[in-house]
Amino acid sequence: MQEHEIRRGSVQSIDRAVAILRCFDARTPDLGISDLARATGLSTSTVHRLLLAMQENGLIRQTAHRRYAIGPLVAQLAHSGGIPAGLRDAAMPVLRALRDETEETAAVHELLPTGQRVVLDQVESRHQLRRTYTEFGIPVPLPLGAPGKVLLAFSPWERQAEVLAAPLEQVLPQTITDPVVLAAQLAEIRTKGFAKSMSERTPGIRSVAAPVFDFSGQVVGCLSISGPELRLPAERLEEFGELIVPAAWSVSELLGATSAERDRCTTRAGGR
Image (cartoon, rainbow, N blue to C red):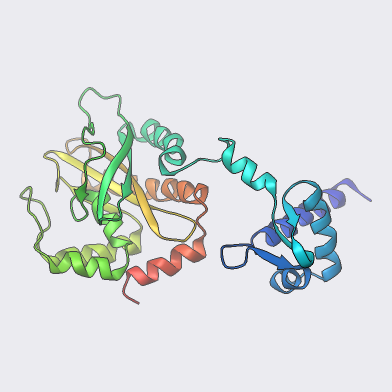
């Protein structure tokens, strides 16, 4: 057998093993061989062979009645520090890369159960004149600023409707206070994947932000890039928007997000 055929066979085995791992979730924590064969489209003999190899490597463990579940190696990796423990840990390397590429301050924000957001951390620009967050851990209403708008845009429609029905605080002349205008912006944000703020919350600061999703597809936070308006004309913000969307998605993937779950929750956020 030629080398490339051996390599192709090895890759195929990995693909099939991953397909088996993807079958397990909170609703189906343990499955039988027939269940896995139906879910993956593989033959029962192939599934059985793969399960034996995966069990030897700790990826799968056998439970009662010849059923299988996620193995101890997965849990060990999750607790070893090799897999980020949360939003901040997953975001920090990405923030450093964004700061280096844009030369502006990059930050990670978390969505709170109260319907507000907080700044978790930042990687500051090296410019003398720069955006510096100081309000770590202080709740900020969602409609204010690019991070707040992007978190609201991807939140369940019920939460958006509640915010849009309440009076919108005007903290600066540029703050969006018209619910019709804000609703149109939220729809545009879902289409483009990022939000912009033209000095709507902090004087002289413009920003862009993109959402971060968890394993369930729910928006849990966002990444932002911000800086002085004199360095961030509208076209520059658009460039940063195109840059931050894939960066934020890379953080989502570290938190276990899948595109299918993300799209399902995004559809719900649009009221459909």
